[in-house]
Amino acid sequence: MATTSNSKVRLKLLIDKKGQKVLFAEANKDFVDFLFSLMSLPLGNMIRLLTKNKMVGCLGNLYDSVEALSDAYFRATDIKESILKPNSHMQPNVETPLLLPSSELPDQKLYCCSKHPSHCYTHQVTDDPNTDCPSCSHKMSQSVSFVTSTDAKFTSNDAGDL
Image (cartoon, rainbow, N blue to C red; front, side, top):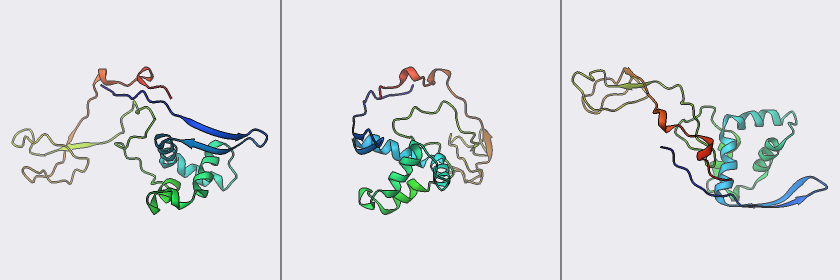
């Protein structure tokens, strides 16, 4: 069953209404992590490429703001670079804070021990068919299927207020 948190995001903004710009924003760490996680999605690469052509809109502005942000605001020096130029492959087990979990499973092949079920009963799986079984050292090349539970679906009604 999906778990949710009922947290609210507090955001203080100082807005220049004539210039239609946010001059100052204050938010908690969860909200900032959420904004940075948006940049780590493949969308971050598209924004970076489209910004060269003067892409307009809030995502382009967000990218420019992160790019102009001083390195002093990041815990490690390589974090800013990983936000601005994310890897193109998605990691299915990485959760993005403040986003609803995806209802679709990634198209991923899983494998178990090739001796299973006749000899090896480790009940372990891998995503690499060349992995050796930790119990019997045979290759884990037997393809297995992942079956979802029908009652574990996450709905928008389960979401907390933002």
